[in-house]
Image 1: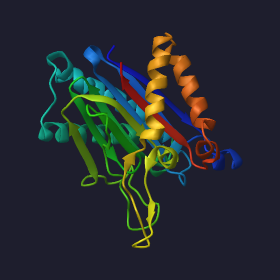
Image 2: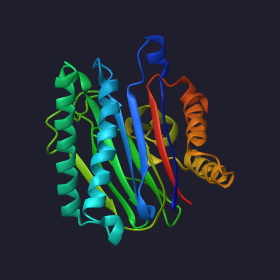
Image 3: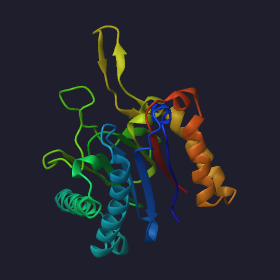
Image 4: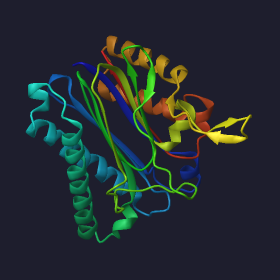
Length: 271
């Protein structure tokens, strides 16, 4: 196994107070040869069944993109697709996820828009990373020079907190990215973790404006990379590591403990 991964979603304080479910979901699936799929979905807070939409979306994303890696023999032949091939693949599979979600809504007599959620899908490999996403959230990676860099730009609409969802007419709003070099770690996170884990929405005293560096915060991630490698050395099970990770998201620092929004964070570290 080339990668050590942890993933968890933790309910935010506002949802606890309002007696609402956690509307985030995430999942990771390791494949052959150091390849794997990570998926994260953040349910729209205003949509009644967005928790179900998020859960279904990550399950479908893992299924569809794992099948794609197998079908196109990327892992078997150990190569990354071209930008055009990845874009076509990502769009096709996101449309299939949306179609299956529509079927789920019909079968369960739910309004389709009530399942609204954003989605981030990452294919990781020994050769690099393939990312696609709809909506907001954050993603980053640690390169060979031990620099943390951004993997995506969260979609921000003209109005505050406006984004786009898997249930939306999303063509033209999909961002795809390929990193075709060795990566030592990666992260995917929902909005609830960004204040703890990313440099974002900072105030510039000279211009009196807010700006978004959109960079993973090394002082947050580097200790967690080391801790994850140590847990692996201790031969902790995946379930045990995920349980510890969820506890960390629930209260590992004051920002996470007091965060009103749901919190999801996937971390992958090269062994």
